[in-house]
Length: 378
Image 1 (cartoon, rainbow, N blue to C red):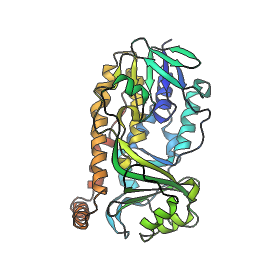
Image 2 (image 1 turned 90 degrees about the horizontal axis):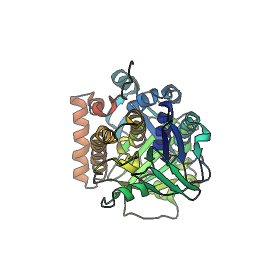
Image 3 (image 1 turned 90 degrees about the vertical axis):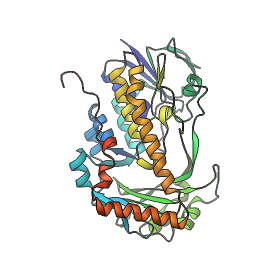
Image 4 (image 1 turned 30 degrees about the vertical axis):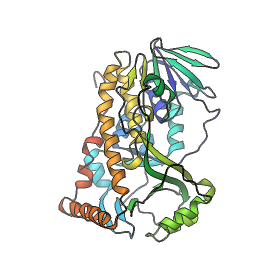
């Protein structure tokens, strides 16, 4: 039986592990933390990723967590719509809309599908030999026919394979994320744009609301009270933003500077090692495709594994880099601060939506109409 060792137990690594096991591989997933904690916030699973999860018989479990109804789209800070669509319209066009869920819930689904005995915690990887397929750990070396490097945006494996690559670059934007109790609030799913600022709202299952915000700040900026900073920036925006911030637990607000790969890797493989997820193509979160592309990676890699990994690079590199670039373009649009530039941006978005009401969806066609590779006989 062919053996795969996966470095990293995040979304991409676990998906790759599940997909490879379904193909008959003996899989071990190595994760450096001693315990998988239910930390993090929300993430989006769009139509393309749901179809990838269907190929692993997991799609319907995720769809069962969908809660959003009514219109969704982009708003101004006063609450007026720039462009919007509906869940029904998205479902008609793509066969699915998008499920926004707790990252921890997705991790539980993937770990169950993998098999907890396949996950080796508290195991740090010190190196990988791409030619021999050897993964080195303090507990000993592991031999593999395939090594899956899913060790994140600061991937040590990527640095070792491609030392000339500059690595992730700061986008210029920092992000706050939080999970807030819904209470009795009416929660429209939306993302609102201001002058260099963004605030997103997504209701989740279990009476929880996932909120996120971004602003243009120097990398490494730190505030003693992050909620106070959010209230200062967004406290006069449209409801329910001020009410959600007032209900947020200051101790549970997550803050991260946003990095992405401005320069693409020359390949997503070398020797017996394949890179997936942020290790291969870290992107800004503006399209909500980070986890989705990691899921796609895992499914495509398992389909092609056992052959020349150049086919994996060919299948994934062009697609993912288009999405990286498009996400960064949106990021730059949200970073505009000049009042005239912001007004022209907003007028352009609203005018385009009036001229072509389905523009918001049509602009996503190439990304969301992706389907996983077909199996023989299916």
